[in-house]
Image 1 (cartoon, protein in one colour):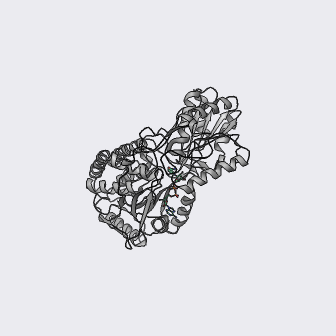
Image 2 (image 1 turned 90 degrees about the vertical axis):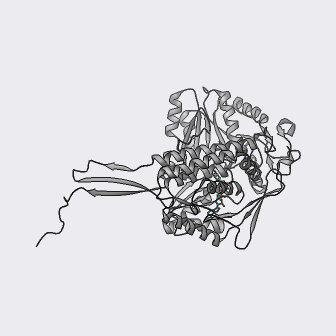
Image 3 (image 1 turned 180 degrees about the vertical axis):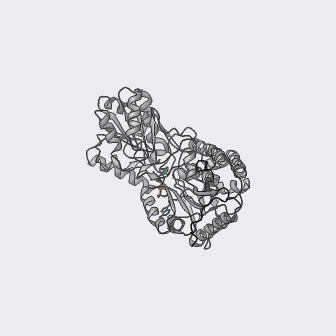
Length: 511
Ligand code: NAD
C-alpha cells in the first residue's frame, strides 16, 4: 500500500508545542513536592519525538507520606463527615474550573498521549459532566430504613465512605478515567491517593491544581507520580489503604488482586477487552461499516472498548469488508495537533513493535491483510504511527482474534446463524463490551441477553453517559464505574438496629 491511498495529515504547526516541558510534582498533604532524591521521568511526545513533560519520580517515601496524609484527612472528618451539600459545592466548582482550563489540559494530554487535539478537548470538557453528575450523587446519597421489624424496632442501614482509596490509572485516557473514579470517591466522602501512568502524569497534576483552587481541604486528594514499582505496588499493599480502584491491563490487575489480598482490601478493576461487533445482513450496513471503522481506529485502537474483532454474516462479508477498507482510507491519520486529525500516534516504539508482531503472526498463520499491515511514516513527524489495518480470514483460535492488540488492527471473522454469532462473541476470556447490528429487535435483544459483556450496544458503538454504569465481566474486570453503581463501589454499608422503648426481654434468667 502506498501512503497516497490514505488520508494523511502531515506535520501541523510546531509552534504549538511549548518550548519548555511541563513540570509535574507530587501533591502531598496540600503541598507540591519534588522527590526526596530529586529523580524525574521525562515524557517524549509519541507523535513529535520531543520532551513534553518532566515529572517527579516517586519512591516509597513519597507514597508512604501520601497515604499517611489521606488517612489523617479521612480520620479528621474534614471531608468524610461534612454534608453532601458541602461536598457537592466543591465538586461543582471543580467542574467549572475544568471547563475554564480545557485548552491547557487538552494540549498536554495530546502531547503526552498522541491522541488528536479535538478528541482531547472532548475528553477534558466531557469530564466536567462526570463531576457534575457525581456532585448530584453526593447530595442524593442515602441508606435504607426498615419500618416493618415490629412495633419496638426500627432498622437503619447507613452508607458510609469506605475510607482511603488508591486510584491507579492508565495512559490511554488519563483525564477521563481519573474523572470516572475520583469524583465518585469524593462524593462518597473518601480520601484518595492517585497515581497516573508514568507516561501521562500532567493532566492529573493539573487536576490537583484545580482541586486546591476549588477549596478541597489539604490531604483529601494526594497525587504520587512514578511507576508501578514501587509507587503503585505500595498503594495496593499498604495497611492504611481500604480500597484500590485500578484501570489498566489484565496482567497488572491480576497482580494487584494478589497483592491486595494480604490486607483484604477491596479491589475494583477495569481491564482489557476483545470487543466484538456482530453484523447481520438485515442491518443498516452503511451505518454499521462507519461504526466498525470508528470502533477500530478511535484512539488508534489503544482503547479498552476498541471493537478489534468483527463477526460478519458470511453472505455479506466480502462486500462489508470492502466498504470498511474504503472508509478506512478516508480516516485522517497524522499530526494530533491538527484539528483535522482523527487518529494520532502509537504510545511508544515498543508498543508499535508489539502491534506489528501480532500482524506478522496472523499472516504467518494464514490470515490475509486487506489493508495496511505496517508502520506509517507521516511527513514532518518523528513519532510512531501505524497504518489502518484490516485482516480477513481470521480463525477464532488465532492470537489476533483472542488477545488485545491495542492498535488500529481489525480482525474479521464470519458466521452462519445467530447461535454461531453469539458463540463466537462469547468465545473470549474478556467480557467488556459487545455490539450487534440488525433491524430485527428480537435478534438484538436475544444477543444482548446471551452475550457476556458489561455493556451491549445495539445499532451503535461506544455511546456512554454518566448515568449508565460501565465495567467488565470475566477477565475484563470486577466492580462498576459511573452511574449510581459507580458511587456504591466507594461505600461501606452499616446496619443499625434500634429498639424503641425498654422492651428488650432479659437473656439472663433469674435464679
Ligand atoms: P498498565 O496495566 O501497564 O498500567 C496501568 C497503571 O498501573 C499505570 O499507572 C502503571 O504505572 C500502574 N502499574 C503498573 N504495574 C503496577 C503494579 N504492579 N502495581 C500497581 N500499579 C501498577 O496499563 P496501561 O498500558 O497503562 O493501559 C492499557 C491497558 O488498560 C489496556 O489493557 C486497556 O484495555 C486497559 N484499559 C481498560 C479500561 C477499562 O475501563 N476497562 C480503560 C482504559 C484502559
